[in-house]
Amino acid sequence: MDEEVKEPLNAGGDSVQKSKPEFDELKVQADEKPAQFSNQNSIVDNFFDYFNYTKRLLGETFGNVPAITRDEQVDESIKNLSESCRKHEYLYYSIKKLVVQFESLQSSIDLVKGALMDLSGDSVSAHKELSDQLTQCLESIGQQSLYINNMISGIKTMEDNLYNLCDFVLKDNSSKAQDVVYSRVYLDSLLAQEKDMHTYPPESHHRISFDGKLEAARTKYESELNTYMARQKLLEINQTETLVSMISFFNTIVKLFNNGEMPKISKYIKEYRTNPRSFRQK
Image (tube, rainbow, N blue to C red; front, side, top):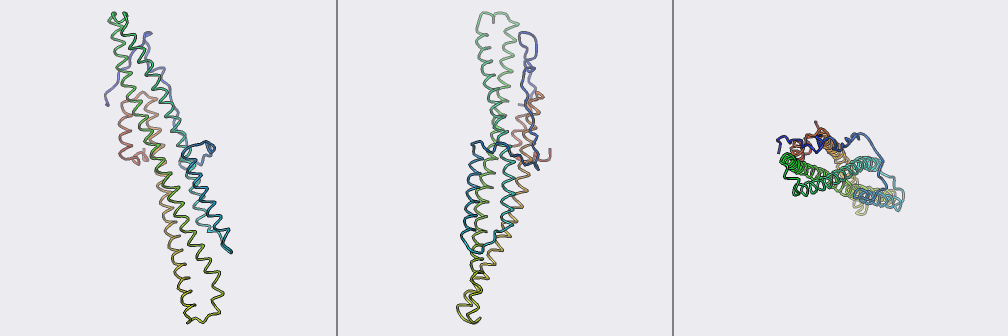
């Protein structure tokens, strides 16, 4: 797979690869927050629909309970998550665009290959020199076609990784955020009742029962909030590393394609599938 591919000559004697289209490297960095593509209908937008629904649900929950103060830590965490997912949204559409470009190139290669096969069957194939050139061209086109298919496959692996990451981060994280908020709502509802409990003696069954509930609710809320925030920090690190590795992989294979180093692409795609994060250092 890694042996050098010969460049076939066309009828004019020029290298066929000179007409090869070039693709731009992805310029977005991990700390950027692009807002493009927000109105396009896609998997990512479906995730944002879910995410925004969850935010509305949290807002309604806060609004329906008297004297509830919105939890600033959870609110800030949700905001950071939204910004982080915007980076993934940008990368997602860049990947989709590249796949379309390569699939179009693949279609063009198939058309050229078909035309050359028709030509090789005509009487002109009796001329050995031209026949040899056609054979060489067909072999090279077949090899280039294989590389292009590998690139499309590798880039679609990035799509799958991105899909899974967004699915996990948005849905699972929103669920965990709800757990924290509901604990906060329950705790605040008990705190609102606390002043009424002073009418009962401290040793009364009613007061002891309430104090136990209040302490348990406070402990549960603090524990869930601390766990959630620690988990959020880890998620942010993981998302950044995943994004950096995706951009690095994306730019590596585009650079190889633009330089005509097609045999190396399969190697990098295999490496990315085996260990995506290996690209974060490159």
